[in-house]
Image 1 (cartoon, rainbow, N blue to C red):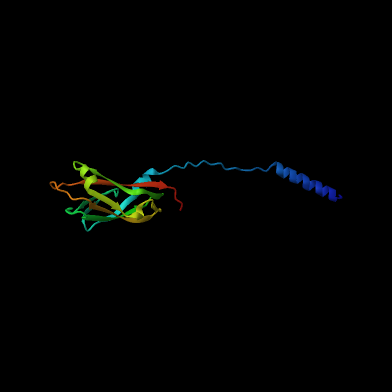
Image 2: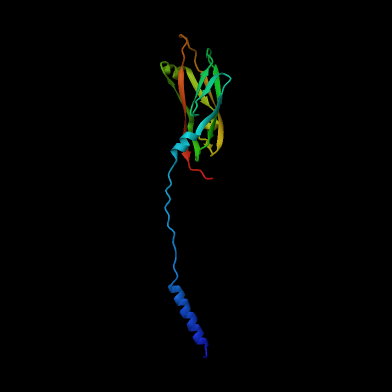
Length: 170
C-alpha cells in the first residue's frame, strides 16, 4: 500500500471537515435586574452624635432627628450651638443640599421664630458629599436677633437636612 502526499492531505482535510461538522458552541445568556435600595439609604444616613454646652440635646432612637432645647435667650446676640455628626452607612454616596439645613417655627409661637430667632449652620455642610461609610461633622447655632418685650415664650422649631442619594462604587 503506497501512501502519497496527496492521500495524506485528503485524509487530513476530511478529518478536519468531519470534526468541524460535529463541534458546537455553548452560549450563556443571563438577565440581571438592578434597582435602587431606598430603604437602605433612608435607614442608614443618620445622626450618630449631637451635643451642646448651651442646652439639652436628645438624639432620637432611629438617629433621624434630635431635639435641642437651649438655655433662655434674654439679650440680642444670645446664642446656643449644637454640634452633630452625620454618618452615611448606606450603599450610596449622600449629597447634602444648599442650604444643607432649613428650619421653621412650629406650634403656637411659630411666628416668633421668624421674627426673633436666627439659625446658622456650618458652611462645610452646603452641597457636601458624604462617601459610603463616612461621616461629616457640623454645627447649628440659634441666636436671638432682636430684643423681645412680651411675656416669656417658648419657641419651638424643626430643622431638616436635605440629603439625596448618588451612585457609589466600591
